[in-house]
Image (tube, rainbow, N blue to C red; front, side, top):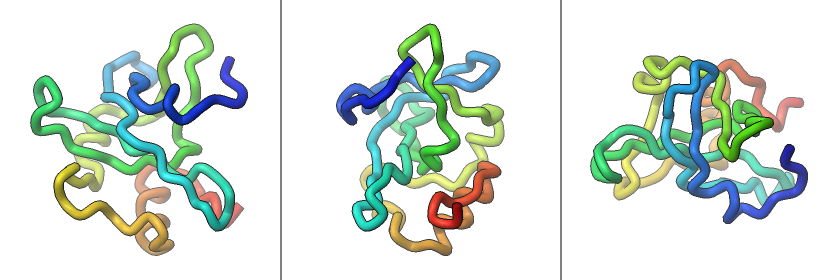
Length: 117
């Protein structure tokens, strides 16, 4: 079980769903410096050998650490992830501070935004 862990240990970590389907790897972590908390994990998914991957911002609360393996679990169907709003690593990234955008991402994955809890 993880407790306090460095960001470098999470970046690159495998992500699976409850069916143990591979959903990709953690590409980046986004910190809300004003609130002093981890806000989003950016998941890299799709493509072939790192080419053509799409990035997805996930509410940090949507992920949990697997108890027996070094991987994260995202409770979402692979098809729902494929249809999720994503972005390209070379394109302009979303404005993670935009609460309207954040509301839509949290809603898509079925979580309350951390700033409303």
